Image 1 (tube, rainbow, N blue to C red):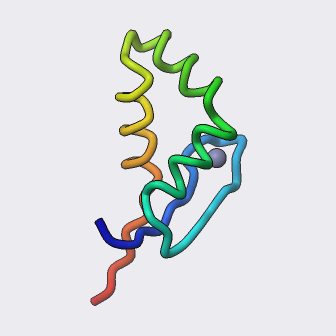
Image 2 (image 1 turned 120 degrees about the vertical axis):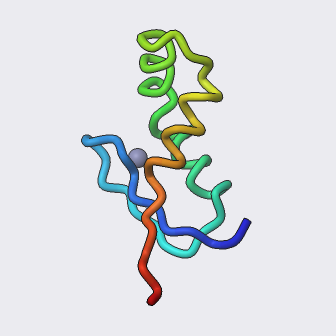
Length: 66
Ligand SMILES: [Zn+2]
C-alpha cells in the first residue's frame, strides 16, 4: 500500500498526517486511542481489530488528484 493522508476521526483529537503509511497512523491509534477503541469494541460487540480497521479506513482523506 502506498502513502496516505489521515485525519483522525476521533472528535477530541486533531491529529493529521500526510503521506504516511497506514502503519504510522496505526501507531497513533494504539498510543492515543487504545481505550477509545476498546470502549467501541465493547459497545458494538466487535473485536478491537475490527474497530481499528474501521477507524483507519474512516480516517483516510482521499484527495482528488484530478
Ligand atoms: Zn487521534
